[in-house]
Length: 75
Image (cartoon, helix red, strand yellow):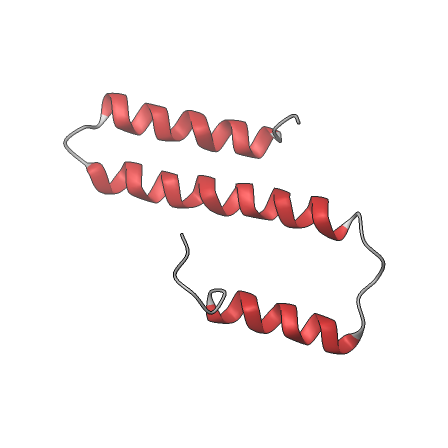
């Protein structure tokens, strides 16, 4: 599976912050957060594009999961 250009750029940003700014770990942390968000967005697009259109109640359930953080701490 190929990665999107956005994910590739975010991954490069993480590497750059880790290598060139070791005295500012918060920059790398922010870049890692962005990378994870972009990877999640890619995954969501892939899944949503492969299933039938969800009903309104199914959309509400999915929205609630995203807003609540998934309801668990499995990270």
